[in-house]
Image 1 (cartoon, rainbow, N blue to C red):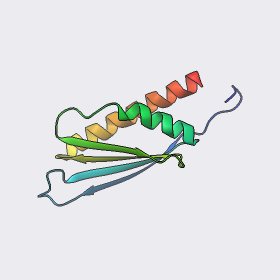
Image 2 (cartoon, rainbow, N blue to C red; image 1 turned 45 degrees about the vertical axis):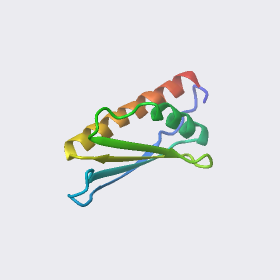
Image 3 (cartoon, one colour; image 1 turned 120 degrees about the vertical axis):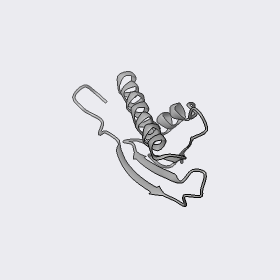
Image 4 (cartoon, one colour; image 1 turned 90 degrees about the vertical axis):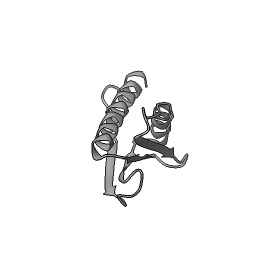
Length: 105
């Protein structure tokens, strides 16, 4: 974009559920992040897939379909606090990735 145009920010939909308490990862959060373009979604997904969760209390799955401008992230955690920390940290990473794309686009 030129300096007179601004790219609309991505939008995010969040779904959080608590599954069966006997499940090893009962706390679940799904983020659906819509990006302005397919290319932006693909770049962000590629960058963020590199980082694995630390420890074994959170599982994260990131997916993107080539024909969509959306990235879906599924978090599963053993504790609510771990889920909150993982989602919050991931949102910070998305912000950094988008700022880099804007700066170097």
